[in-house]
Image (cartoon, rainbow, N blue to C red; front, side):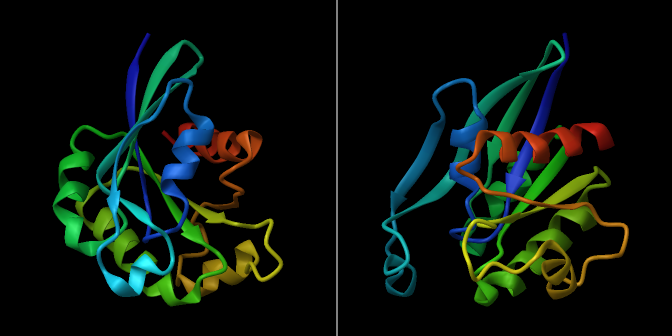
Length: 170
């Protein structure tokens, strides 16, 4: 049995914590605190400040899933959480064009310091104003061969497809 580490990252309010809550086989350990920035507090009440943690078993292997904070002010945790990871998932809210720039920065940050494979998950595909996977790929300026999948973070099957694609690439 192997122990594998996967990091889930993405901008504020993209669905990282929900993704981990949906896919995890254990109760998720979360470090959510009240949002103090007034511009963000109107979007949601709490945000991850250190990490989220969940666990999944695949093919007899234990996969430890660590979620990063989405705000750049907590960027130090991005670096800490990348230690010994085998790959990462970038979750992007496909309805929130205002955060696409943040998503591009996060992808660039992780891709520059790590050679590990990654998958982009276009979350909130169940909402009527969600961009398609292809539209989001263009908005994020991803290369043609980038792996991007639709995601509904509250749907177990959808979350598993994203993780399974990443595991295929490892």
